[in-house]
Length: 134
Image (cartoon, rainbow, N blue to C red; front, top):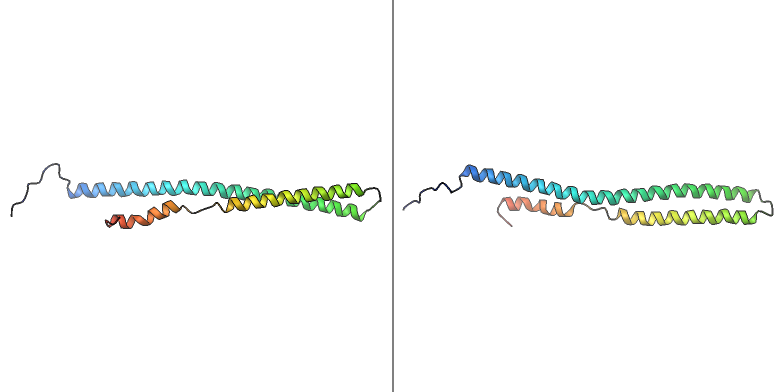
């Protein structure tokens, strides 16, 4: 049985280990970059949703103030102020409708928050790839 001579161009075990370590390090850093980019999109959508909820809360407070003023005017009914009372109720209804719209759009934005699915899926493939499975 004849053995072939080792050539200078053949990789050594040390070189193979070094190359594998470098490739694994690159793979892990790319996975981290992918997870960061996916989370950035989700965090932005979550922030917009929270901002819309805050706007809805502020408008709801304004609506309560307007309702309180309207109730006070109804208690102090003086006969010729009917149009003013209805005006306060119309403004209250408008604020309430606006708050409802903000809540609706806030819920839609919050539902867009997702886990970094691509990074998780690819991360689960790493152990198999290291074992030589595809």
